[in-house]
Length: 428
Image 1 (spheres, helix red, strand yellow):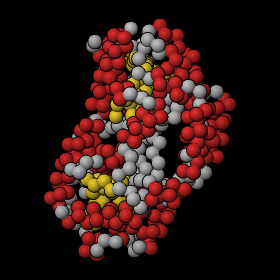
Image 2 (image 1 turned 180 degrees about the horizontal axis):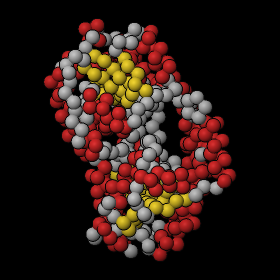
Image 3 (image 1 turned 90 degrees about the vertical axis):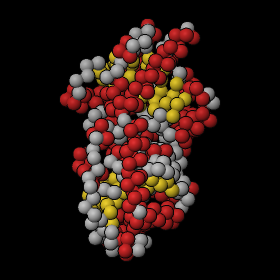
Image 4 (image 1 turned 90 degrees about the horizontal axis):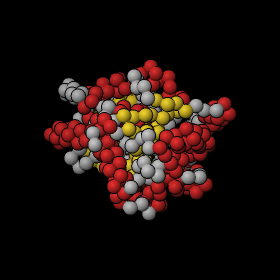
């Protein structure tokens, strides 16, 4: 079958070229898939303005939100995001908004799916593995692809204080939701294939639903753009080895671990390095106080939030990426750093540790905060002292990240479309 003949219905509630995180990841996947096959995109009304100003895609159907849910969302936004965002509570309370979207999609597309108007139905978001897709009921003759989904990762046992700060005590709401939400189990049981964004989540779903191996595939949701891949790393001026952290300044991202690790370095090493922290968040004031108390003001620079293009400049001018986040699913910043030739120091827990290999950086088991600090310090020291190792890891990082280019990922998904379509036809 020629790729252009595939008619795909893509259900992507969160899909937006101007929003960060999941909506932007979903948009990049959709955009590249749309170059290859005939896509009808179904998304939320909130994405309309961005699509109509940023893209020329015509087959977009927007699902509107009722007045009650609009008011309800504003209430939840104010209630669950005061100060530090309480994510478990936020995701639980906002489920009715997704539920309305899901039900409207089913009502609007049930008959066209049953008629066979589409060769495949692909539900791409939400990416957290806690949401049902009612359209699976209509996919009796049309293959249904789910994902990539990713999530469910617990905090390491040695970081319970950080878990409390992130309201992890409310994570029981996940399991409660899975048992109470109609259609959740059916979605995973009836899906023809499930793409999963991390090894942990893959095993979790297999255990929960007894899913056979041939119905799942490890498929990292994050990718890298040609802008990053074509960006040559700027030559160092030789004055300092430049360390970089990019991410939200919240407890589990562990920027404080990098700062403390630097404070334990010998003065000889400290004099050779600088650290730029790009990002903002609830922990910024605490981190600035930490830097002041440790007398690291001449080494550590807080950049704040900057746009993607400016962040790219920091990547290309740096030498080492330090990102010991202890509970990271996607971690696109690690791919961006690798694309710019930076050896990466990460925590070995979640998706980011699956990007980094022994040739491209270091993965540290998050046994405890003290252990993580010590190991980050040791790895920084090693990379600062061993310039040939830095250069070798830089080359290997760029080679490794080619696998994550959006176009390449889209081609794999289209190949999966073909496999599922052929399998369904053979079965019929």
